[in-house]
Amino acid sequence: MENYQQTSFTLEIDKFSEKEAAIFSPIFVSGGCEWLIQVYPKECLIKNHLSVFFHVAKPESLQPGWKRRAIISYIILNHSGEELKRTPEACYLFCHEFPS
Image (cartoon, rainbow, N blue to C red; front, side, top):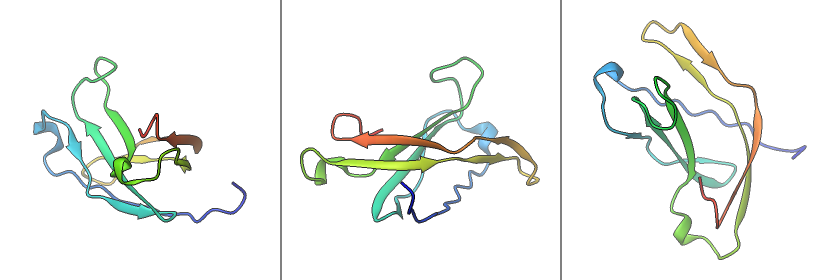
């Protein structure tokens, strides 16, 4: 993946501490693919942790056997813009069998 187009997407969640259910971003385009982000503000996989998932949007509309590679990192800020978490870049494979 030497040549890739860097894209940024901002998901702002108002009144985050009051949220109970999963939050879905609008669909956005990066690298010619449609994506969405799913955030669980309360426990999902690990107790007392925020869970963030990246999904290929509308995978059922893609050709059988499709694959996408994505280099993903994200930053979590509080309401004041203070950085709470920054993940390192990591390469992920999304495919027909594993669209998330």
